[in-house]
Length: 437
Image (cartoon, rainbow, N blue to C red; front, top):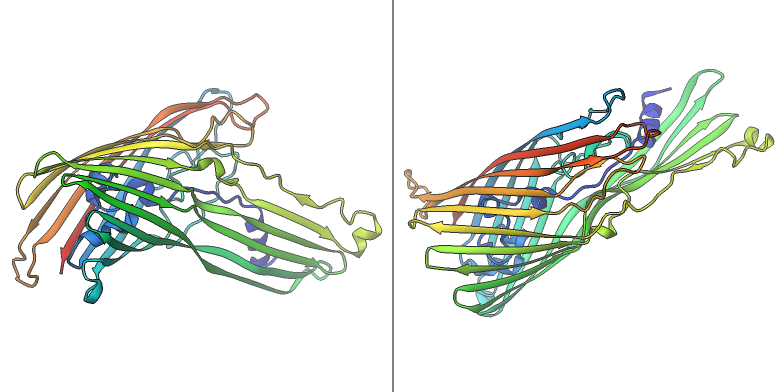
């Protein structure tokens, strides 16, 4: 078979997986990361486009930032049956390396101090979009394997209604992988490929974001953000024409890079002029998650098979069922102490429950569990020694440790995998430079 036909068949047999996005998993920007991601009522720069677009209107100057992040997993996956081998090919998720940029732009004129726009973009270092494909028989880290490797785009607008009440509107964008067809014509008698073509494209998919910000007291701020579910939908039909014998037609379809409906609600309180505490709750509608595995429909037909009465006997449709995920309610907390106008110290923590049920069932091996996160960081600014910039340059640094609690998958003897235990730690650092024009 040609390289094209091999590619088509390989694609048809490859399961594709779904995961939450990198901002939800690791945070957007070092200040947010250092404060545990509890920023629904406190995001005060371009990162508000993700955490709460209503807060974009709080800043009066154009704000720009560039961020770099690196995260590494240290996993511990152990078979409970030494006599039965365990597939460890996906026991550790790959490193997550990427950069992000952000821009906050307050508008002037008649809407000055009443309307601001924001942009946030995440770019993975290696590829713009990866759809990873471990087998359902191979234990793999559901949240961490391909999740960070996707281009993320957030656009938003903050609107001040009155001084104490703002609203935010935004969109998050992702691409759909859509194919109009892959066709291969093969003459088995002469062992030649007579032709082939493939046509696929990335289509744009957007989901809305709605938010509000309320300041009931001078020292107290409240925020609520709702993000619509986000997903990459792939549909790839293909056909192999075995001339004079049969036609093999199949369609590969499913959902990848899934992020559920998410409701964030938070508060920020200035205990003193230099000390701020933040607290967030996060509800995610994981019970609506689609199957994380690929759907395949195979139709083998042709005059020879029809004459033998096998026209539909060899057709196959893969079983599709809900993964049995449950809704989750997590909590995040953070604190920032501004020692001087030039220097700030930050701490944070979070509890992120897992939506993934126990993987005792045969044919499913999604490794995930409740995660505890500890975060910290610093921020400092300084005058530009070259005097190129009029305002101080802001540098932010943060570190994060996620502890995925131990869990065990108890498999039946007929399962291809033995029972196994798993746990992991994920460590990371992030740094950013910000500037107000």
